[in-house]
Structure formats: C-alpha cells, structure tokens
Image (cartoon, rainbow over all chains, first blue to last red; front, side, top):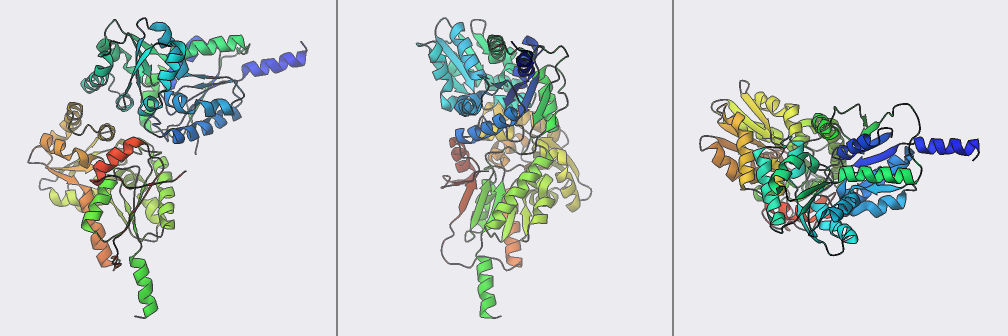
Length: 276
Length: 276
C-alpha cells in the first residue's frame, strides 16, 4: 500500500461519526457510543427547535431527516447513526438514499435485540405515535423472528414527562401503568423502549413490568452495531489525541441543558446553534 | 363620501381576520370569535409542524411568529389575533412591528380580564415554560392592576395531556394538583388559563381550585376585544353571504383532527397544508 493511500485511509478513519435525533434523547445513544468506543469522535445533531417528531406526520419527519442528513454529510462523517426511533421508522430510506456512508439506526438495533431476547416470541414495543402508526417495529422484529407477536403501545406522554424531569413521580407511574396495562396483559417477555427518551424511565418501567420481562434499550445495542461495522470496514479512528465531540442544536432553551445532562450522564457541553 | 371611497371601505371591511397559534389550541379563540362575530371571516394558521412553542427559546419563537405574520398579511387580513400566549409573551413587538393592521393578543386580553376580576389582587397564572420565563403576564397584569401579586406556574404537561385527550383522567388530576398546589397556597382569587390548550381542562381545574377562585379563559375576552376594535375602526364585515373560513397548518397528523374538533366544538373542516 502506498504512503498516499495509507494517508487517505488514515484521514477516512479519523472522520467523525454523525449521530442525530429530533432533540436530546439521542444523547443516550451518544453516551453509549462514547462508552463503547472512547476513541471515536462524534458530531451530534439535535433538532430541538422542531421537536417532538413523534406526533408529526411521516412526510414532515422525512423532510427534516433529509435536511439533517445533508448537514452531517457536509461535516464529512464516516458513518451516520439515526438515534431517533421516529426518524428510523419513517425516514430511513430517505437517509440511506442520500448517504454514501454506512447508516446504523436505533430501530433496527432494538428490533434485533428484542428478537434475540424473547423466548416466548411475545414482544411489547413502547414508542411514539408516529413510530407506532408506521408499524416499522413489527416489520423489523418479524424480519429477525418470523413468528413473533408484537404488541405496540404509543406513549405520547413519556417524552414530556422525561423533559419535566418526573422520572420516578407518581404521575409518571400512573401514566406508565395505563400504557403498560394492555401490553403486559399479552404476557410479553420482552419490552422494547422504542424512543430514546424512554431509557431514562427504565427503573420505573422495570419495576412495573416485573423481573420476568426483559427491557431492551437500543442505545447499547446500537453502539455494539456501530463497533462491529467500524471494525468490519476498517474505519476505527487511529488518531492518538483525545477526540473532541461537537454538538449542534436548532434551539437551546434552558430546560434542555438539564435533560441533556440526564441523557449524557454528565453536564451538557458547549453546543452550537444552527439557525434554520 | 365618494362611491369609490365607500367601495374601498367595503372591500376593507370584508377582508378576513387572521388568527394564529403554534398549533390548534388557538382554535378555542377562533371558536369564541365565530360565536361573538358570526359574520366575520377567519383565516386560521397553526404551525403544527413546529409545535410546541412553549418549551422553546424566545428567539426561535420570535422568528416563527414573524414568518406567520408575513404569511397572513399576504392573505390581506384586516386584523391579526395572536391566539398563542407564548408568541404574545415573547414576540408581540415583532408582530406589531411588521403589521400595518391592528393586532389583538390573548395575553393582554387575559391580563386585563384578570385585573378586572380579582378583588384580592392575588392572581395565579398557569402557562407554558417560555411564557412564565418571559414574565410577560406579570408585566401585563400590573399595567392594569398596579399592586397585584402574580403567582406564575409553568405547566408543561398540560398541553401534551390535552393532546392525549386525557381531559378528566386521574393522571391529569394528579398533575393539576401538583401544579396548582403552590399557586393555591398563595390564596389567589383569580386563575388565568395562560395557554390556549388549557380551557379544555377548565372543568377539572375549576373543581380543584374551588368555587372561590375565578378562572379566566382569554378566548372570550379576546373575542370581545376584537369586536370592540372592529366597531371602533368601522371594520365590521358587511357582506351578506355566509363567511367561509380558511385553515392553514404546517403539518396534519391524524391526532390533530381529534384535538382540533375538541377546540373548535365541531369537526375540524378541510385544512390546507403549508410546506415550510
């Protein structure tokens, strides 16, 4: 291999990974990536001005996803991670169609993990209205476990409750009991947390679902998929200096700093405002 | 007065009233306008793709408000009604600065009504995070009642609860009890419903607040202000045919039809999608 070619490869490998979400929930995925791949550099994009996506139409979400994909590709990313279940549910073909670099998404990661986890083949999915309406989880889970029975439940209040910081509040417990009732009645043994906000409710949901139900949080599964893909394509970052991550959002009200810190497990660092 | 001038006046009077909100909550205001002024024509704009505004920064909300104002002015409205407390709280100077036609807003209407209603001068305001942070209600109420004591409470879960249709649900009651506790502890005699979603929770809030507390719903007060202004400026519509209202939204997922019907008190009519 010529020196020039090696140099090119080196540059390729040192490019960042683009991670995006409608807001800050995707920071749970960024956090998992930083833990699993501490040498990788991340460019995070959260469309905080237009969130939430989970109550909006597929066409609108797809348009936004295309705009964000374009933004990240211009930042020369080597891989895209769709860290938003709603975008993964309704806009993945748009993203992969635009992207010359590999695309990993949280929905496929969650579906695979659920298919592997379930013994009974009865799988519950908690997600946004738009994700549930798309039936994308049913299709993705059945692609990996043909005879699975998937019970989906839209939980539109979970994201606002997380953003209110009521992670273990009686209101959240009562809401969760209401959403979980029809799902648990189907005796699922696996419950997919199909929105990147929901892992913050994991302790509460685990308590309500009981020890016999396994909760699938796609952040870690996604990080594992990214690690495998980087290794397979020889794209692991080789630079020795510590990676400096970048964060872009379309709006930054104060409240998001608090929720961002919860998602990231540390204070939200300096972020750059993008005016769209 | 020359015939030509009379003709011009006639055309002026028959122009529609532009009513706008971040979404569909403003339909509670449109509904009050239709009841108070059944001969007026309304052009309604709801920015359903980018809602909610109540958790976003002032700068972002102001930018959106300018875009909507421009849209409605191009539709030749004779008056603008800011039917969104958050926009009224942080973007009113932008709207009035752009508008050559009179502007009425729900926040000022609510503040006036509260100032008139309160005997003790202790007034509670329930609103979005952005509205509460702006302190616009405090300023507006004190402009009409100098010695008023205003106790504001952000209620970020109320709008999502209304959109979930949980108007009289145990979760909503528990949430309302939590939000009302510090406000009622101040022994307010008047409670402003400072977001156009909240009138849908009026029966529940009235029950929790008790008969001694008057609830101010700015929709009706706004309609009365519009009626006064139309009369004062000789701008009442004179055309004999029944007015045909127009509705524009930036996104229209199914769920909004249901909530829209609740706000409007009748099925949501045909709406036109604006792609921004």
